[in-house]
Amino acid sequence: MGDQYSGIELLKRPLVPLTFLVSGLFLTTGLPGIAATVAKVKENITLDGVFYDNPQVILKDYLDVFEPYERFKRGELKNRGRLIVDLDHKPLDILAGTILEIKQELLRRELGHINSALCGQYHCTICCQGPLEEEENSFFELPLTEEEVPLFPLPGIDTTLTRSANAYAEPPLMRNDQPFYKTEPALYRWRQGWGLILTRGSFCPNLNRDTGRCLIYEKRPGVCRWPQTFPMVLEKVFDPEGVQGIASANGVSLNDLTDKDHYYVSQEKILAVWDCPYVQEYKDDIIRFAELSSLEPVFRRNKK
Ligand code: SF4
Image 1 (cartoon, protein in one colour):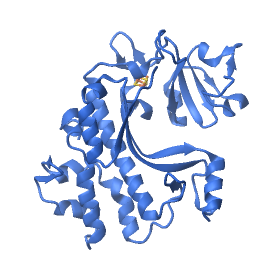
Image 2: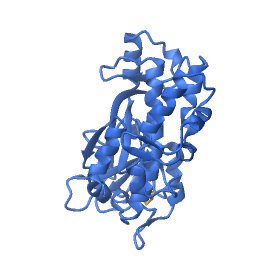
Image 3: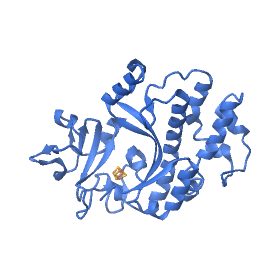
Image 4: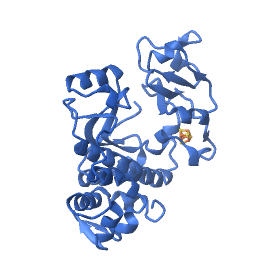
């Protein structure tokens, strides 16, 4: 998918309009599955002014994303195991929440292809280093999953103190009698999970500074695949007490939730990091991509 089309071609041809058509057709007809529905869409279709040259080929790597619709139609999707809420913290019904979950995953994959294609052409390593000396921030944090931590040959700091704090807590965690961000880069197990802290003037140990290339590119963590433009259809909020409060205020049983640490807020946004050169060059295309995806584009700086 990503190899067949250039990054800018993918940016100019968002998938959401096509998937609206397919999912609407599937949910309102007797068609037996998403693959059978995609097969019914004619070749060479134009939607919202965007030309799709072969919907079956374009969507072939995404069909599994729509599997929850098939379970919903069979009446098997009774409980999603996580709390999805609107901006007023009211839980969404099963179909409304499922639509947003599918859209989040679709855009996560789609923007992963676009970011990889566009980022590479700039040989940019901004996301792989800590703040510059003249910048205001003291550190740059890359959130990691438990499985991604061993990819980084750095000290791992996991104590009762780190587990009760986060990188932005005041007063800051002390390490070797200094605020942690004045010491060497390290991996910290905060309350909400692991983070790689790149301190001012430091570089990720996986960056080859001579070539500007990532030494673990194929295995690089999720945060490195969506650093520039990423979907926030749903915002994942770490707040175990908040989950309990929302559940009890709305008659949701905690026993029905498999994720009791997070709730997910419907934000319907695309975030684009203004530090990145491709985001600045393709700003208008990113705005158009967001509009066609029925999302609000938000541009912001990561480093100050
Ligand atoms: S793992 Fe690779 S892509 Fe991620 S910050 Fe390090 S060098 Fe950059």
